[in-house]
Length: 375
Image 1 (spheres, rainbow, N blue to C red):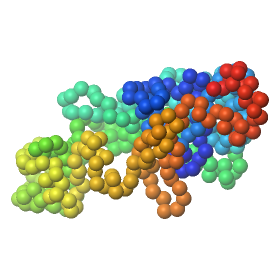
Image 2 (image 1 turned 90 degrees about the vertical axis):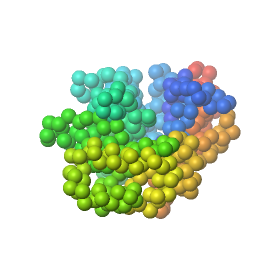
Image 3 (image 1 turned 90 degrees about the horizontal axis):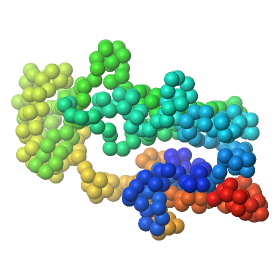
Image 4 (image 1 turned 180 degrees about the horizontal axis):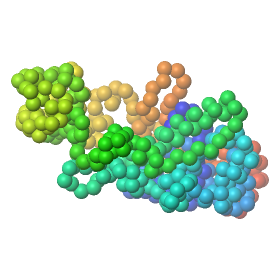
């Protein structure tokens, strides 16, 4: 999707029954049976349906490989090789092809053939163990962070491979997997364990190494405050009328604040709970330290800043009339980066891609439809 935002012509090859994510609901889109989960990650794509288990479908995949720069797939390692459309097969057709495989555990190792989902990798990679309240049950993040991070790693790898090809003329295979991405995303937690042997604890919204850095209850909700320096901590103390804390030996620097976490958090909490989120927003408006409310999605999209940066886009849709999407977050001073087209309906572009991209004549396309090779 990120490649599509940047202008790539993205062709989504689906089975005749469609991507399973289309069924991940409710809620579903008005006018068809596509889930809003599917809608969230499939803008700027063309959908074609191909039975590439058939010989005709396999030949169609070869024709696509000849004309495309990049192929991205997320089958269990070896599955597409068995069907004759894996990297070794397609690279013979197009040696310049960049083939990106995204899997649960990578192509080697004891788990290579295991299927993988975001939450499985999050569990096995340590994220779930470190997420949640200190004495609470295991919880997962509210969105598929491991999936998203892996996709962004794949995006960076594809762009790098394109640059490599520009200089060498050669394509290559890229392997990205959920587990490796998740473990690499554990950053300081993983590094502290590797070098100090310290198992991380669950901190809720708090931080193991910075205090204060967490959510605090207000009269009507919660706000998050983070002070990463003595200057920021001093400014917080002044704004909550606790100037005496600035030179208190217990809290004189971050190391002491970490040691005396419970005392400090109680003092701050007793102050923060006396006002509403909006009242604190006014007080902290020009604060030197980062802060913000814990928002519902309603709060998010009613926020004046979110409205001002025009992150939400509305796109025409053939069945629903229009759909809203969260557009790309990165802004370029030159070049395009935008949500151009709504997520496609199933097989919406099959005829168009075969005729105008592959150059198939109408009789051949009709025969493929009649033979249930395409939809």
